Image 1 (cartoon, one colour):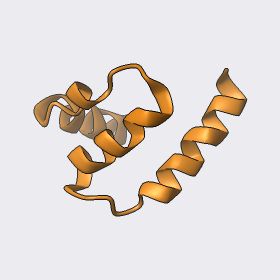
Image 2: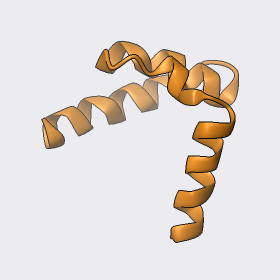
Image 3: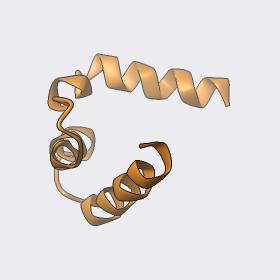
Image 4: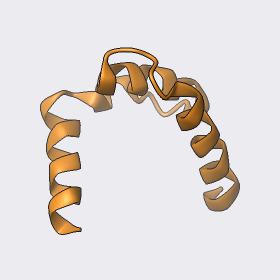
Length: 58
C-alpha cells in the first residue's frame, strides 16, 4: 500500500494534476479526469464516486 500511495502522489505532483483542482468540488472532477487520462474516460464513474464521498465525508 505505501508504494501505491507514493506512486499516486508522484503522478499528482509530476503531472501537476493539482492545477485542475480549484477546490470547487464536483465541477473539478472533469478537469482532473482529463488531466489524469487525457480525456473523459471513466468520468461518469468518478462523478458518482465523488458524490458518494461527499455524502460520507461532508
